[in-house]
Length: 268
Image (tube, rainbow, N blue to C red; front, side, top):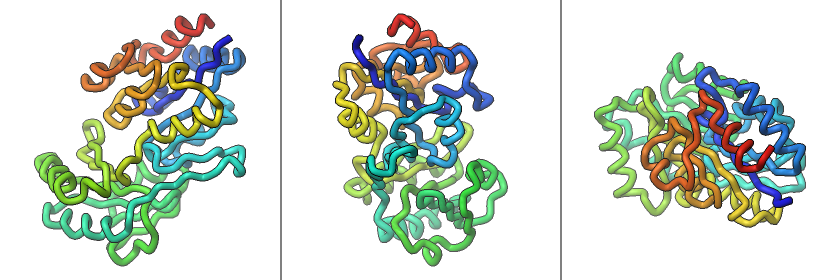
């Protein structure tokens, strides 16, 4: 039997809109695991906010977090820990410029520490998942280490202006993406960091060729991973640019897209 590596994005992909895994898809994934296939999570979330799904699926594999800026094996410290943060000086420059656009807030994450430039109840709710260590205050003073990623929460009309600035001034140092609606959030990581880089590392570890990697996603932070995988699969609810480069399009995250696709492909 050919062994496949199956990579799952979380939000909008594995998770339904209520942030749960459907019983059908879970059953298919457990069957795939029993059949000897390898299942990994590849998400923009930090580990603390994806750990519950890792445990729910009973995984014993490495995981890709922060869109590839952090890759590690929760069950095996000897596997290695790959952390690719931003340069602190670049981050401070970006904060200075962002303030000119009257942004609502800027956040920095260093693994499980979250730093807020301004107090923000709405965002605190989202980022409190997994009980991180939270600090609020001027990031230029508070940040002492290179952050894993930073997030700029702006008014909708300023998002593209800020992204243009980032591309023109810092393109050689950073990559940036826009969160899906309704959030007008720009997420910034170090250049060259993406889910495909993390997934490739894991595939090499298990000696699984790219042709036998199945990856599921729905947003622009999945583009590189879907393009790289032998079976890059866009969800039915995915953005159009992702569907355009995907090998296949399955049903939506609400319609068991992952479960239906894997049951058919792997004959489970």
